[in-house]
Structures are given as structure tokens and as C-alpha cells.
Figure 1 (cartoon, rainbow, N blue to C red):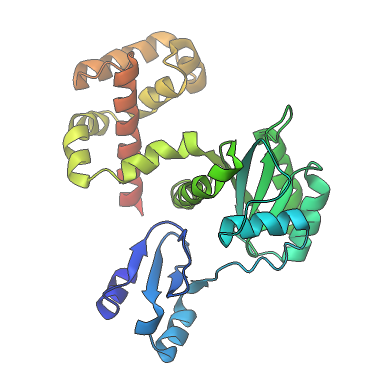
Figure 2: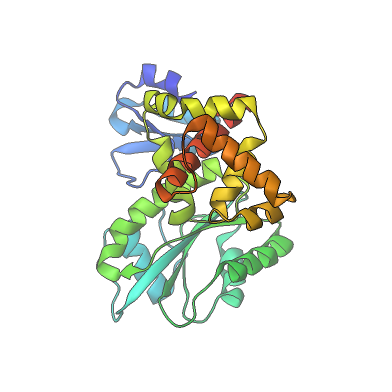
Amino acid sequence: MFTYLRKKFPTAIIQNHYPTNLEATKIWFTNEAEDEYIGIVRSEITQEETELLHCLFKEIINPSGSINDSPNSMEWFTYLYNNGPMPSNIDGEFRIIQFSMKESLDQLLLKEAFKHLLPLHTILVLQDDNMGLLIEEKGAWNLDEEQLLSISHVIESDFFASLSYFIGQFHDVPQIPLTFKYERELFSFSRTVHKQAFIQSVVTVLPEFALHHLPQEWKKQIFTKVTDTFLEDPELIHTVKAFLEHQSNISQTAKKLFMHRNSVQYRIDKFIEKTNIDIKTFQGGILAYFACLNFQSDNLHKKE
């Protein structure tokens, strides 16, 4: 859809991730699935055209931060979104856990819910009605995946709103704005790829993000042999991917797939023979894992 709009607005920017720089010179829109974004120079669009696009798409509004009324929340909001000064009286390493909800929820209700669910020193920063940040300092005890899922279950049962998270990496405070810029892009990308996943991180998203930006002709040439092998034996990809995701352990893979370990060994040997990629080595495993992701991505798009 946005590709057609470029005929009308040739200088428009179209991308698949949330815009990390909402500059005042552009107006941004996204589609219903929020998996494509377009930025149009404000001086090139009329008021009538803007109103028409509002009827068709959702405008991306630069967060105002007015709901973040505590000193810590306001300082972090200004630091991350408005290029403000570094928050005062802090030291050590911090990380940002981004969260989003498919459903919009009143910010006051969301703020009150998190207030009773978060540890005392975790800072809540709301971006809009369905996105926000949890900022925490590195310590002996930090939020883990199980606790984040528990928070999700409470909010889902109370407000019928499902959350997804992206757990950022710990960094010194001066490094965080730049890190946050890239982690926002990864989180936006992950929501278009892993629509059912609740918790993501750099570790889980980066392989597919890197693969997504590999030129199509490269992927076609590099993964042709593996693709042909998977097309000949569609069950083979499940065995290979499970094997790689279980540290190349035959017994754990067999347990995961409810198979006899000899059957797993046979399939692994078959893959190595067909593709000439030794997935028992670290380098071979990396190449095979990218090939698995590429095959699954291609077949997902064909189904859609």
C-alpha cells in the first residue's frame, strides 16, 4: 500500500520498523498491522491529503511524556526521547525493557497496574497507550522472564491486554540513548516477525534481523542446497533446527521431538551428506541455522 503512496510523495521514506527519529519535518503513518511505516515531508503534503491518510492509517505521534509525572520517569523520558540531559544522581549500569500491547489501554490505568506489580526501584516510562519502558539498574536481583510473564498474566486477566517484551542489554548511562535507538528498531522488527512471542532480546532477534538485511540474491545462492534438501524432506528442518537449538545434543533433541536418538542421528547425517554442511561444528551450525530461518521465512510469506 505505502509503495503506491511513494508515486504521490517521491521523497517519502518507507521502512518495516518503528521510526527511531520522529523529527518535526516529517509526518509518519503505519498500517493496521504496524509492520510498515511511511514518513512524508510535511511541506509536501496538503491538509486535505493529511486528513485522508488519517482515515486510512494510524499516525505515529511523538510521545509527549505528560503521563510520566514522577521525577525519575520524566528525567528518563526527556533523556531518551528528547535528547535531554542525563538523569541526575545515578551511577552504574542500566537496561531498558521495552513492552508493547496489541490493545490500547488508558495510561493512568496502565500506570496504576504496573505500580503494584513492579519492584520498588524499577522505573516505568510510558510512551503512549500501548507502549512503554521498564528501566532497571543492574544489581543482585533483576527482573527475569518468569517475572515478566507473571506481570503479563495479571494485566491480561485484569484488562484483557496482552504484553510483549524486549529485554535490552545493560550499559553505562551515557551509552544508553544510542543503544536504545538500535534496540527500538530490533523490537519493532521482532513484532513483525514473532507475532506470538512474548519475550525477545538481542540474542533472539539479531539472527533474523541480520538475515532480513542480507541481499535476496545472496540468500538465494547461499541457501539453495539447503532449501532443496528441506523441500525434498519437509520434516528434516524441524530436526536440524531443534538439534542446533539444543547445543547439538542428540539426546536432548530426541527428547524434544519425541524421537529415538538413532532416528535423530540418521537425519542429521542425512542433512550433512545432502548439503555438505557439517552442523556438528560451530561454523557449520551457524550457516545451517541461518538457512533454517531463511526457509521458514520464505514459506511463511508464501502462506500469507
